[in-house]
Length: 80
Image (tube, rainbow, N blue to C red; front, side, top):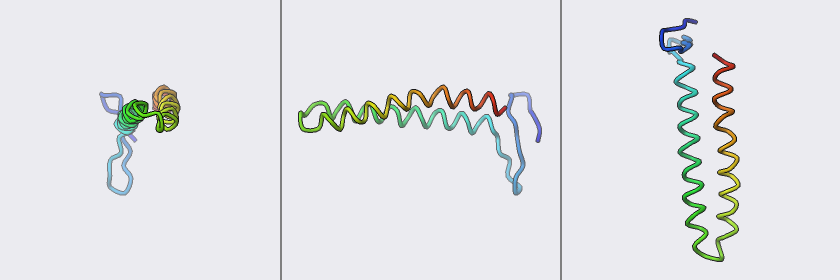
């Protein structure tokens, strides 16, 4: 295990370098993409009365995704 100048922990496992900081950045970005998709699709579902319930469900899921964002950052800080 080594720490480089960019504040990344690097582990070598089975001849592969695993960069912990990059992993958490990837999780954070993927969470943001999924969050945006939930809100976009949920917004379109509000255009029809028959799909309003499903739009609301996607908004609730998106709200939980907003909760996950700081948890990813906190996990990263604790891990590093």
